Length: 177
Image (cartoon, rainbow, N blue to C red; front, side, top):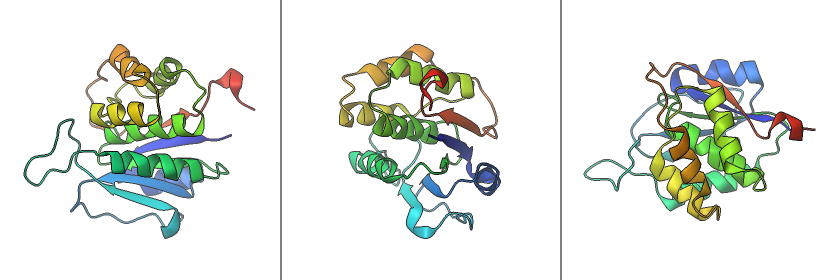
């Protein structure tokens, strides 16, 4: 079993190499340009265009949608777990932590939502998962409000510059093989 690495855009190449990631999910605004690290093959890179907003989009803003969450779930369940999954957004604070939780629950649906969210908080005191992604993920994964409630319980993360990648363990250490 391996982990999920969450990173800001500025450090994706470093994190991919450091952790040996070979698969990546990018959650970026539609026009945001960036280069996929060479160690990530194009067919194992999922690029989702969305803004970091928690309300229905207006104007040029694209809110997270069910199609985005379905893509995260499908990609995560196809992840071979031979190496860590790298998930990033612009700052590594909101969209990517939310996607990491959704991916972790897609892979291990038997785990407790609150325990998972507490592992997230222990790994990143600044993470503030996007509530719209969380709400959609909670519904699509059949969590019956448990994931959303767990996010509410840990509250907003500490203020920071966002340059703080972290590793989210897929399962509690006592459950790891």
